[in-house]
Image (tube, rainbow, N blue to C red; front, side, top):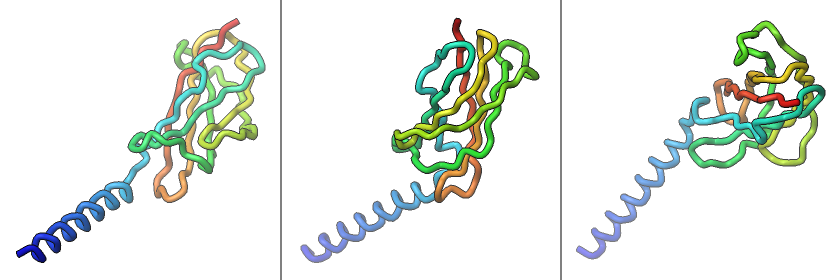
Length: 133
């Protein structure tokens, strides 16, 4: 009887571990989120930093490949007002830094798309940056 209980507990532990492993294996693009490091930046030539976070673990995602960016003034009703965005190096894992020129004060929508290692689908997101004088 004692041997049966030990085997049952071992089997239960194995099943639990397998279930937890499978839940992590099936993470999807909705399990990631872009977050602004600072919601306000100076108007004009500036840098915008975002963090890519795994929402399940709360951990930053390093080594993602950001391949699409768009900065526009959609929050102010001027979606056609865009500005170029250039990625610049950063030393913080999971943080991605971009150089841009926010020519007008107000809200700027920053859209991003990234490939995350081990994730089959593209991770997309957007944040709103406020340019102040």
